[in-house]
Length: 237
Image 1 (spheres, rainbow, N blue to C red):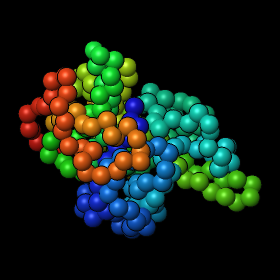
Image 2 (image 1 turned 120 degrees about the vertical axis):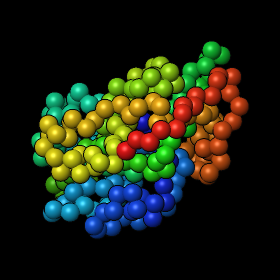
Image 3 (image 1 turned 135 degrees about the vertical axis):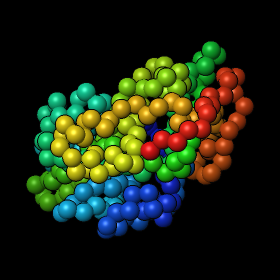
Image 4 (image 1 turned 90 degrees about the vertical axis):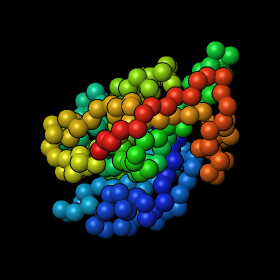
């Protein structure tokens, strides 16, 4: 599961994804929470575009009314298998969420939920697979929204969050075009747990628990009663 993440600068996201059309406008955020409007990259009319979209999947038949029990993500095994996701999955309504990192919480022996910041070793900005949908009310109100796709956790993430063995579907750079434009079978084939030895994680301040806090100090390491989780640098794209 992914409930909070760090949003990079707009120019960094544009260098990473090189969208043909940039309709988005945003500033960095160190504590993006669900639900809100955030930047995504998608394919449209044969090219890519960067747009703002609601994080929080609103099904087409919901008529632009968010569900009271909506979730920030959907696991890989349910893609195309539920009534809400079947049409957008078969219609290739896939998008990419730019990230600089995300947060997880680990339950310590003292029953304290220690937040951790998770990032990639050699990719300051990376893309996470997501599924989007368009929902329109009878009055013409439109919501375009998405849900993050999750995959079974790698060992690093599994050690951090033992209560939820899922992690965001981090995409390799070479797989961006396949995720956006490939067939459903091809797109699903690029979804897998990102290797743990190309990731790192460190404990951060509990200030991140409140979405009201949003500054660079949120991702700085702090002492923890648990060992710092860090893995060797290797190249992976």
